[in-house]
Image 1 (cartoon, one colour):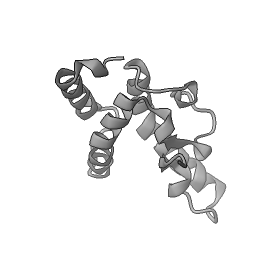
Image 2 (spheres, one colour; image 1 turned 90 degrees about the horizontal axis):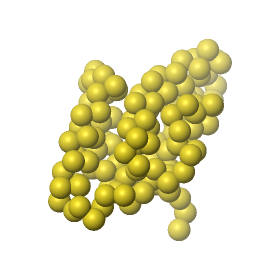
Image 3 (cartoon, helix red, strand yellow; image 1 turned 120 degrees about the vertical axis):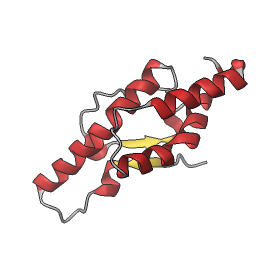
Image 4 (spheres, helix red, strand yellow; image 1 turned 90 degrees about the vertical axis):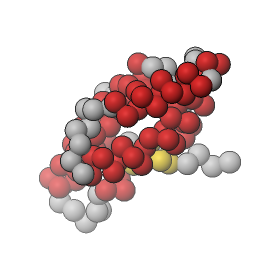
Length: 115
C-alpha cells in the first residue's frame, strides 16, 4: 500500500511563484505546523524523528500517514480538517486544545491506546 500524504507545503506553492512568495508560504506552513508537531512529539504519537518540529526545509515537508502511531493517526483523522478550518477562520495555530481534548477522549475510551 502506498503511503498517503496528508498535507504538504508544496500543495500551497505555485511553482511559477517568485522565491520570496514561496518562502512566505513555507513560513506560514511552518508557523501552522510547529505547534502541532510539537504536540504530537510530546505525546508520543509519531513513529520517527523525521517529524521533529525543527524541520530544515519546509518547502519539501510532507505529513504522511506513516509518520504516526495508530493512536496518532486516529487523532489526526478526527481533528485535522477541523483544525485547518479553524485556522482558515482566523484561529491561532498555537491553540491545540482541540487536539488535546480529542486525545484525552481517545485515551479515556480506550486505555490500551496509551503508548
